[in-house]
Picture 1 (cartoon, protein in one colour):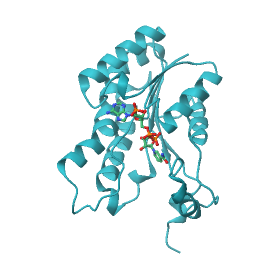
Picture 2: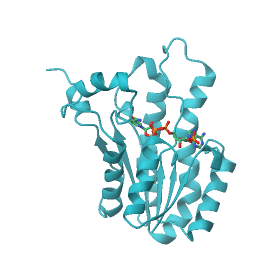
Picture 3: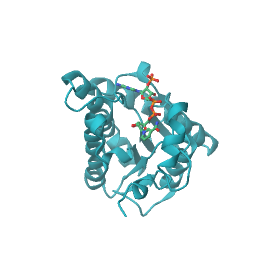
Picture 4: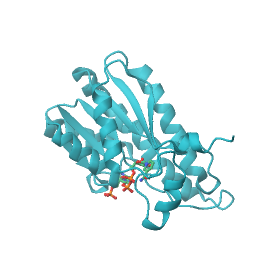
Length: 216
Ligand SMILES: NC(=O)c1ccc[n+]([C@@H]2O[C@H](COP(=O)([O-])OP(=O)(O)OC[C@H]3O[C@@H](n4cnc5c(N)ncnc54)[C@H](OP(=O)(O)O)[C@@H]3O)[C@@H](O)[C@H]2O)c1
């Protein structure tokens, strides 16, 4: 079983790569130094390298992202927008597109690491919310485009890796009274690799944060 994890040097991606290895997978955990996934030529080259090193591809996890920084929607620049959409939306698209024939051959799986931001409107993260909503749509679009050979699923984490000073506040926003851990997301990835009748669906891994924010 062979997996390419983009964002594999990040907090969540590295936990996913470690967990997959424990489960017996061969993993290429790619960071920015392995190619800028927001650039289609580099996204294609990364997939080519992954297929060559691993001998094929059974799983692609799209966990690369950047540009998550608070800024008023009224002050957002073109550069902020490009950064938020680059790895998250464009990167997820072009890496998945390049991996598609290999995943088809192996009857494999794609997991998009999304965000509850796809479903919530955060005024200080307008471009991030929009990019995450775009990525969540790609989960569904690719599920249709690559069926029946390839399943395409998403995971929408809540706060799982936040700065220490944010932890208490974010924990209070959940039903479970704690923030998540990258390992919580990694377990969900492993679950989805074996969930053979699930495609086009996103699993919310947020300790109940989306529910908690509902009005009484
Ligand atoms: N952290 C959370 O609490 C949280 C919550 C909800 C959703 N998420 C989502 O989970 C995913 C991973 O988040 P994280 O917190 O693990 O992020 P992170 O720690 O900031 O790591 C980001 C990863 O993406 C890579 N990357 C960034 N820009 C890239 C580019 N243009 N091309 C290739 N690789 C690039 C980085 O590579 P380098 O290490 O080489 O820079 C790193 O491996 C993201 O989609 C994020 O939106 C995170």
